[in-house]
Length: 371
Image (cartoon, rainbow, N blue to C red; front, side):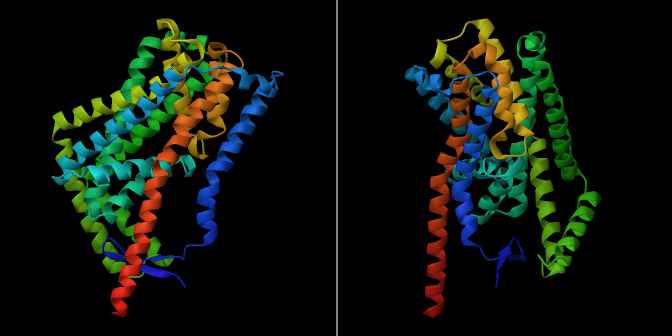
């Protein structure tokens, strides 16, 4: 039998957790990485590439330390952005929870198709630690919106100044079209969230239809309580979102902050190049930034977590000339490690601690009932 738990103010049915689900969580990253290696091998095999030469490539580990510094600097700035939005919408800050939800968001982003599981996991963990569901949703959504706006502005600036050089990248024109798709999708999604903050009738109707569907498929048992809880959540969400949107200094400050940490994230490719060939000149640096922007936008629309498959193909295609062979294979592996493996490694300790805490709370609850 399953178990009934409380989510928000209404009861939801959760099926029992199976052992194979836990096992799949553990082995899935290895399967994904193995698939990435297979894709790299298949792409390079067509060029009669000798994979053994990859192991002869030497790295400047000083620049690789720089990559690690950028990884954690980006995380620190992202947590700071979350703290600012948290303070604005809820009136309080919580560094511990902001850090935990950040690393778990990155973990679940890399574990779910289309990298879609990160934001819902943040809502779940904030709510789990006592935050109101409506305010929690507004914090996470606001963080997403300012992040996407910051990224779009950054991409816009990069393309305004560097678009004329896209022909110098192998496959750059074809891959570049994905940026338009990605930006349009992000603008539409952000617009929907903002619309929900100022509209009452449409979100309420959508909410009622959603609750009705969940009730019909027996995920929700008490329809009236669910309707009431969703209405209260939407009201809290609207209040919190309006509070942020009516503070332009905070909003544009966090947008600038997100553009900064996105740029630092992209700049990791420069340090990877430097570890292989030495620090690039201005012309090569510009091509590296332009190229990795294309790769990141392409990876975001790939169905497998981390953009596996598409990311490797486009990376090898775009950077083949810039890095040369076999260095381009080393570069794509290093990028995969810092953009896919490290978020999983960083989030895993928080996931394990959360699991132990859950077991401890369950045991204490059972003991209190027996006593």
